[in-house]
Structure formats: structure tokens, C-alpha cells
Length: 309
Image (tube, rainbow, N blue to C red; front, side, top):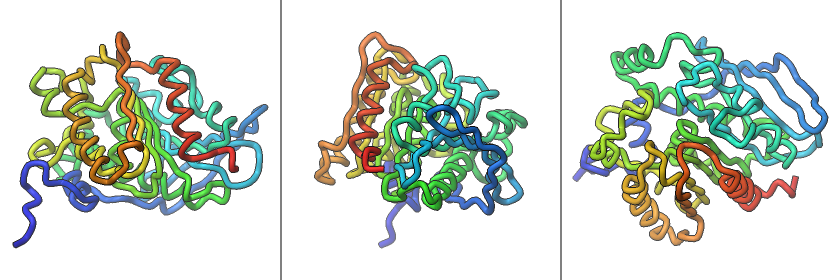
């Protein structure tokens, strides 16, 4: 008998998840470097990445030292700051303890961030218009975003200064959702850390917090087919760090707990319970704390080992 992939929580494979997203992984046809800034202790590359007549701005930070380094896909946040996009890598945003790109480059990582549709240099058309257009055409904005991020991972694996066996992903808020979902879809991501956006969707609806999230998350039939906890569990046995604030309205504790029960079960089945860490910080909202920053940097160093570069 054929497997019923429409049954509740039936999505347990990469192909099924791409099908739910109505998308697929992508590959950039060309990547050009438009400028290189060599700063005192790191370099910044300005990129244009192209596929299917779409041109995407990318920013990349890297060490000045030669050799092969761990790579990091940095997924930028939302926060209704549509003008930021990839610039978050080198400029940061209010929710962060400073920009990650320069700090990661100094620590030995090659990190890339690309403008998502409706952000940065792709801010027009806006999010609402893009969600309608993709749904009307039988796709999803989330699927398009993840497809493009998978292409960015592919680009990292092809760089001479990146070790393709040591690629991670990181993001906060929307970038967190992109990071764990892409890690579930793309086994080239060996470790993933994410902040402030891990919460079960059904529970968000029950407590009426779902409308705090952006429209990019509109995925028809999501809760009938799968769950956040199950998707994050698809990452097992690879290392995963989850950090949330207990006072963050986008991730209420009950929604975290329900997701975590499924993710933990998946890691236990894989015999990798020690590779999953979830920290919920009391009296913390939708922002990164100094402790979260330390946890992220320690996690990446432990699992991607930049000291070997």
C-alpha cells in the first residue's frame, strides 16, 4: 500500500517537505563579485548571485588568512525592516548584540547572507503582494526563500576557501525559521543554531499569537501534514542549538514545549540526544542576549572547529 503523505504529521522526508513547500532546491547559474573590502581584520565581498533571470544581492565576510575555513549560511531576520536584508550580516540590527559577520570572520568563518524576496534590494514588490502571487501560481514564498538559501549553501561548498564538510547555518527570528527548515532539507548543513522563532504553529493558533509572524510563513496545509517539532527533528543526528526567550510573544513557552517534545523524540530515536540543546531564557523577549551570543559562538566552534582552518 502506498504511504499516505497527507496524513497528519506525515512529512518525514526531504522530498515530502519540498512538496509541501511547493518548491525545490536551486542552483545559482552565476555568481559575480562586484567589490571586495579588505578591512583591518577581515574582508567583505559584495556579490551578485543569479538564477532564472533573478539577480540577488549577497554579502560575504571572511578571514584574511588563506586556507579552507568553515562556512556559515547566515539567514537574515524580518522584523518588518524590509530595507535591511543581507546588510544584517555586516551592520547587525536592534535585536542583536552587534553584527555577526565581522565577529565570525575574525573567528575563522566564511559567512554568506543573501537578500530574501521582499527584503534589501528586493524590497519591491512587498511581502503581501509576493505571498499572493506565489500562492496564486501554486507555489509559496517560504518555498522560494528556502530554495534560494539552498543555492547559497551550494555556492559556499564550491568556494576554494571553504571546507564543504564544515558548513553551518544560523539566524534569528525569520532567519531562525529559515535555518532549521533548511537544515532539515539540506544535509550539507552539518550544524544549525537558531534564536527566537522555534514554536509549534498549532499552539500559536490556539493562544492567538500566530498573527505576530510574517506572511512569508503562509504554507497551505502545514499543520495537517507536519509540525515545527517534526521538521526540526529531521535534522537529527546533526547538532542543533535552539535559544528562545520565555517572554517572547512569538514563541510562548507552551508552543516551545510542544515542539521540543517531538524534536527531542527524533533525536533520541537517532541515538543523538546529546546533540540537541534547547535553552529558554527567563524574562527575555524577542532579542539576542549576551548569553545567547556566547552559546552560539561556542556551539559553532565546537561543531565546525574553525581552529583547524
